[in-house]
Image 1 (tube, rainbow, N blue to C red):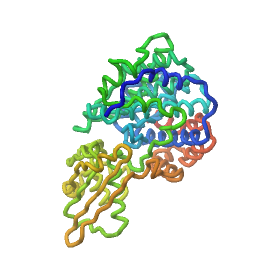
Image 2: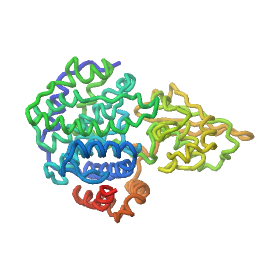
Image 3: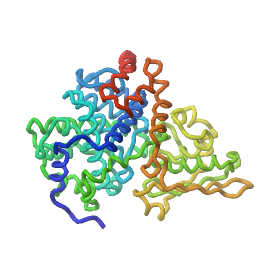
Length: 462
């Protein structure tokens, strides 16, 4: 049953965001640095994609400026940089996420925070604090409405991400509680993003995080100039939750344990460049391969049992990058044939391989009631592999690699960064290991971005 309507949610959240706090605790400082490094990995890789390049071309024409770094190359106005970087960070399905909200908070939040931070000349501690606050707000709002928002056809990343971006920028701009609440009201009028891309693999999904980053930043700029938004947007009817979740939301998720129990400490990191719903089945297949009991040519069928939300990612005929990144049958097939999937496994050469196509057609995906009952607290998956002349094999995971209860270590996060970015950074004279050391160590945000200048110049001149 949905929680009863609550009052004062907007005021409580805005008051917390606007509070002048001391430095972040050590665990949150370190988490902010992990978020930053993983974000940069996603954005550097994503900046190479056609969607990010199209948005960069558009922004170069419409958001000229020199205030903020574009990860894809050059500099733009803060709004332009937020738009381009957010699109890039969400551009190749590598960005982090928050399972209870089925959302990706860092792509919109960090994009907005970096752009706004550069615009106001904020120091590193201030930017990192803004990132943590923004991720917290985005994660809590997404969790409060999920899965109702998803069932109504909305994509939680931009839907909640615009508020996280606004919160981060409110911190950097020093907005009062009243101004922050108004900025949330303005942001709510920009909230949106449909899940319709799932049916066609439409690349507009990539832009969702960029739009949320830009609109969150602009919402704060409007509010600080006196433009008012509805002041109780999370309480009122009509308001954000009544519009996007109906009466099936839990407002307590916004404020319970605020500042004590941190959602920002419970985001996940992706080891594979594809939708998070695919990671559980991938881990099951990797476990099967490691067990040494598989002979792929003899596989008759693979049955994947998962929770309802994930079961919709069952497309068979893959013809685009996004379709491949959103398909459980493709992920299972490509993992069986190639092992742990990386960037190359989501290219036409692989998805057009007759062996991959044939194996994907033998994969069935179904929703399991027991597994559905465990979501979103867990992302469980079970895989049953039937082979000719051998017993069936069953493998299960409760949480895929990268979740807080099954985390990627700093070393694994660093390896992800260097593995995925080396071919991009090294030709431009940028040492990926130096970026890792600065991001996870004591380097300032400016230091980290400064290390990428060779890459930025190379991208800007391409």
